[in-house]
Amino acid sequence: MTLNSRELRNITPALSKKIKQERVYQPLYIILEDVLDTYNIGGFFRLAEAIGATKLYLCGGCATPPDAKITKASVGAYQLVPWDYKATAQEAIAEIRKLKRIKVIAVEQTASALDYRRLKYKFPLAFIFGNETYGLKEETLSLVDGAVEVPMYGINKSLNVMVAAGIVLYKSLEKLRKK
Image (cartoon, rainbow, N blue to C red; front, top):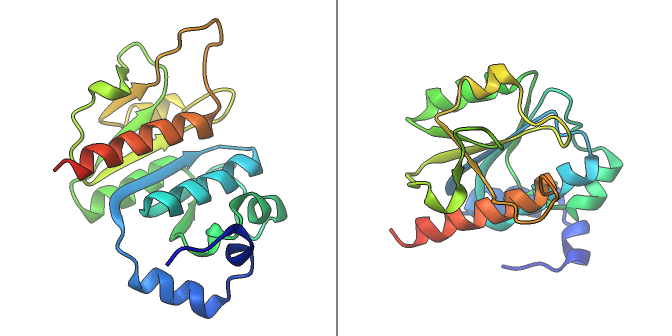
């Protein structure tokens, strides 16, 4: 089943529940730490739905649905993605680690970050994304299994968090499909 944006915006709770029950989820988790722009959060719901992510965690300063801007930016996808709010990213990481042996990878510019194309993708996998201005907190970075970054070739230091997420998450799906 595919729905256009008008149909997604008008999805009924019953259809949303049916889709979530019948859907095959990819072994991917997304954690957001203090992502403040509600349009970015809505975009993450669209991205999570598009890739079939198992779950989206909104942590810290993230707004949550039914915020009007998230609802609008997600084009209704927030109704189709399993999600949870945690007070801290550390809580989300702890929950994910209890589920399975899931590696948590930061998408962050750090001294040890790999080019995202060089990561040895092993699934299930969780990616964590930080605040649009400040990135991930140091205490969060201390809990991850590694970090990747999207190389920058211009004078701009970084991409929008949603753009970086799209690049990295679709690359992970490419690797998953090759298995």
